[in-house]
Image (cartoon, rainbow, N blue to C red; front, side):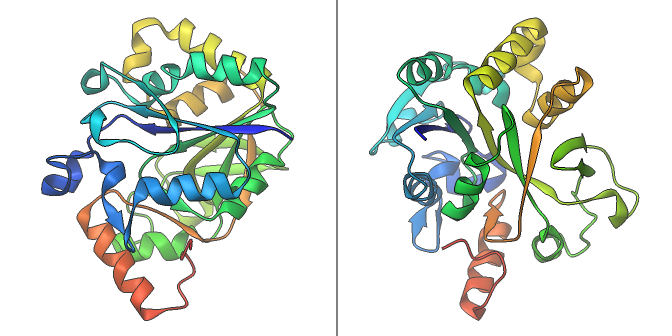
Length: 254
């Protein structure tokens, strides 16, 4: 199967504060490498043939073994608009025989096994979710219910995402920021974005997934257990470095 990927790296990551004063969040280092380097290695390790990075803030800082395009309105738009900036790339790779297109946030690191498992999902649109999420959320927030969102799946299909959980029973896992599209799935996503009009600029990816569910579009839900993390703040980075130093960490992605 021929595959390609997109990394959404337009934002600054203001919660990183001084760490992103001169370069984007994706270039902040974790375990000795920029986040972007970990992402590229995982995607290439899963066999992706072409790779696009969508740049925005401090775009010239992002250089490497990949193609690039820009979101010139990155300050005024959300991640869904950044994704649509890659439409030309997506249509080109699909026209040249690519069968699956992986989309990655730029503030996560993950093992290539997760990418391979996502690519094996037959759904036209699919996401990964972490069944071992409690350990990661406890490390980051203390209380695992803090910042967690509802996530329900049934028979490998997403049923609910993005609500406020009342208990751990409301959470089958946590969405990670990895998605996959077939050509048909990509067309569905583009049509939905077009229907949103100007509202697309303020729509985040979780809200986009909720909109797909509201329109009865099947979204595959692929379970993984650990071996990834999200770097949203300098506190996250320090917590992960400490966990790696202790060894035998469930979310060590390397």
